[in-house]
Image 1: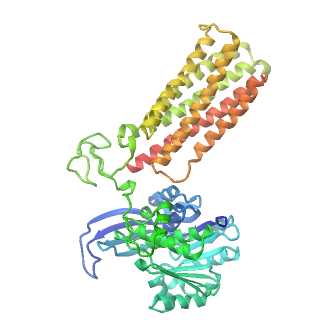
Image 2: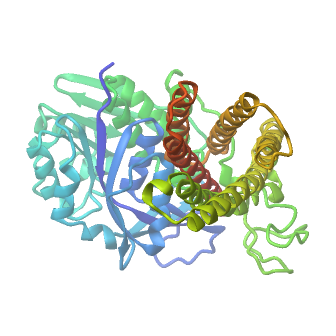
Image 3: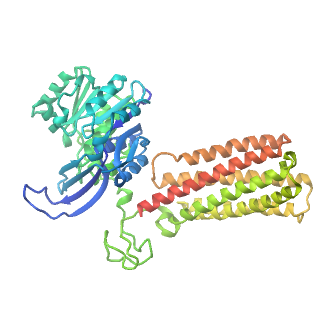
Length: 563
């Protein structure tokens, strides 16, 4: 299979306000909604997220306002690179979606911020794209024709999802496209042909060297590439909400193409993704994982797919208020707690995280970890002055004062580190890791007690024994901190937070491993570099504790978002 290409999405971001109705109202008719919810959406965002969740490398250029910043976070969590998404626009793009009990929908969009994408922004975004990468456009943003021309000029594979099909597509340069994806309505708008197969042939004539896909909803999709024709009849489902199904198809289809799959395989996966998305409400949050798509895609066409387990944010209303603990028996979502006024939301956590007391450990642990870092850095500076002060000509009184300060702050640092990691351990997502974490947090106090006894001469030991205790104590610190970073990263994945691996965990672990190897090399070779060893320890532990604090903060933020 060929090396995977990056998918660069220049697309729309919408705040989807979804109202559920028994039937789509006729002109002039007023109906009462069964429910109303707000989701992250927009064709560009949905397609980028679908491709990323399938495993593709995805970047996105888009715009939204502050009230749409949650869309950017949702994309980041799905694995999309969001550095080029602005969230400072005056007005966010929005869509009002009516979903009937049958699963049919009617949508009205207000592009707003999506119409303020600039030519300069597109040029800057495409500057890092490599020849042969895929660039995906939809018809919900400004500068569609200019963007297509710029991408084609860079020898990029330009794909267009021509939705919605409106006057903005007039004058479309089909020869610049590597691929075109449309549904039946859009195919008819572009060709005037009601029959989707005749519309496919008409579009294929305009793109003799490109790929044309016409999606047929529940009937699957048909495609043309040169003289070859493809058909996949899709899968059967009990639809809950068809919003975003086409976007799921587009994103997963292109992700499969990007990793080198052929058209037939890509269409099967696109149809599987669209069908799976139809069984959940919302657009972006309904997107399936790669494993779910692969399993469904291998089934025969027209197979009836089983419903997926509920999404994490579709859990039950908690028995007690997450703010004050008041019993919520008989109360529903959207009501307020009679005691503290907190709005009642559905929430679902797994394992020990079902308990609010466990989830709340990470917020304080973050501040304890930052305190550890501050004490360690200041204490290190004091000890460094005490060791190297004479070489700099510093007065003896300052050196003695720095030694006392350094020792005191370093010991305080180790005690605070014990408190921080004890809190983290009691918040880890599984009972086993929690127990091991508590044991390790307590065990890290043993070297500290030994260091104090040795330094105060309350434990008279030969120098060789003292040195061995110090060396193995430091090694123990390396192991304990590395374990906690690994467990924080594992808890992140187990809870299905962002699918990407947290960078902080990788950086912290790398710092500990590299520093540990260098420190042990110097130590066991009897290197005469006490200051060098101190600097290595200072950088390694400071990096690890900052990474620990960052992970605790991110986990706490994700927990608050779910609550």
